[in-house]
Length: 116
Image (tube, rainbow, N blue to C red; front, side, top):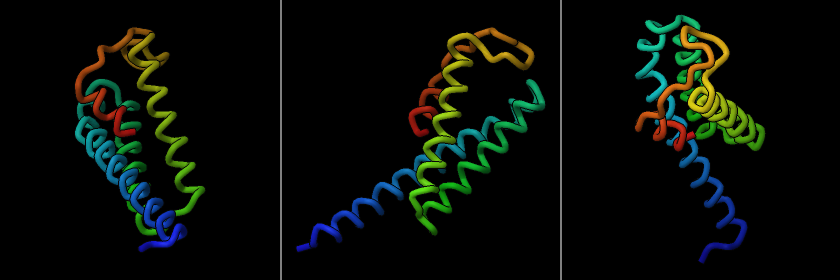
C-alpha cells in the first residue's frame, strides 16, 4: 500500500503528464494552422508559430523538470491564449485584416481551447 506522500507524488506526476500531453496537442494544432495564419496576416503567423513552440517547449519542460513556477507559468500563458481566442470570437481582435470582426468558432478552435 502506498503512503499518503507517495500518493500525492504519484498524483502530481499524473497531473503534470496530463497537462504536458494537452499542451503538446494544443501546440500541434497551433503549428498546423500557422501557415494559414501567415497567409492571412504575417504577425498572426508569427504569433501562432511562437505559441506552438512555447507550448511544445513547456510540455517537454514540465515532464523533464517539473516545478511549481513552471506550472503557474503554463497556466497563465494558456489563460492568455484562451482569453485572446474568446475575444476574437466575441468581438474580434483590434489588429489584423478583420479588425473588430468576430470570427466563427470552428470545431478545431473549440478542441484546441479545451486542451489549453
